[in-house]
Amino acid sequence: MSRDDSRKGKGTIQLTHVHGLPHLEKLEFCYPLKLVAPKAKKGVQVIYVLSYGGGLVGGDSIRLDVEVEAGTTLSLTTQGSTKVFKIRSTGLPTEQILHVRIHGILLLLPDPVQPFANSHYQQEQGFDLDEHGSAIVLDWIVSGRPDNGERWIFHHYRSANTLYRQGRMLVRDCQDMSLALVGRQMRHLDCMATLLLVGPAFEADADAIRQRFSQENRIVQSARHGARHDDFMWTAVTHRGVTVIKVAGISSEQVRSWLARLVDSQSWRERFGRDPFRALEM
Image (cartoon, rainbow, N blue to C red; front, side, top):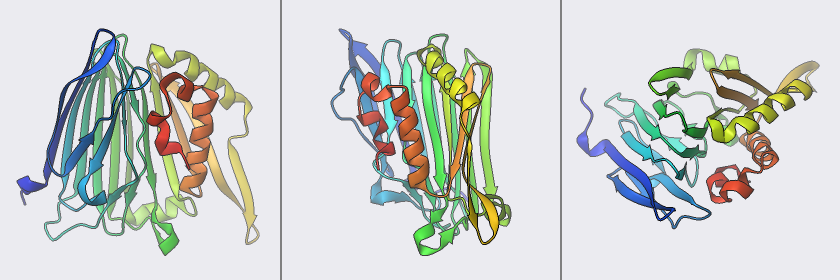
């Protein structure tokens, strides 16, 4: 079944600079996508990526094309979790597609995706970096509505992030979960996050995180019902210049707090301001 054109949101962002200050050369969007761009601070242009009604319904499709020119820093974030509602009668999945050409610095730190029961979500994010391009990319998911007893009962969830450097693939990281397996795989965990660091702007940060990885206890356990359970875990690996950090915990608050401490340990708020990291505030 073809997708209803009224559910196809498209957007374009082109960030350049004029006299050393960020300048939005292009900012275009249409329903159900909404882009809000407040005045730049500390040389960083923040854009909030929103949807009307506070979430995405089955059949919604959003495509966003972005260019970050040399000498600029763009932050893409949200103002709340991306709620994904159940599949509609069309049976079409909810999809989001992001493509970013990076000559400067990209900070992509949204709130988590929150797929509700019987939802079907797929996300494809591609990042093309030139030799000077750098990025922080956060991609994370919560189990649904755990306070209501709704945990990992979406129909299907898939999120893929692919990073290229001058046309050469560096990393493709993909999370693919289905109802038949995810509940058993995740057990009592309610949140999972992937953080990607790449580029010369974050080389020292990646080195520091790898050093921390070699020294810190990376698994926190608890005893319940006579058995040991892994309540929190994280890992980090670098491949072709991309540092991939994986985090999982028993709540979004726990994972959010850990990520916020990581941000502070690298002084990113002092460097880029508070706004790019608001998704990590409690």
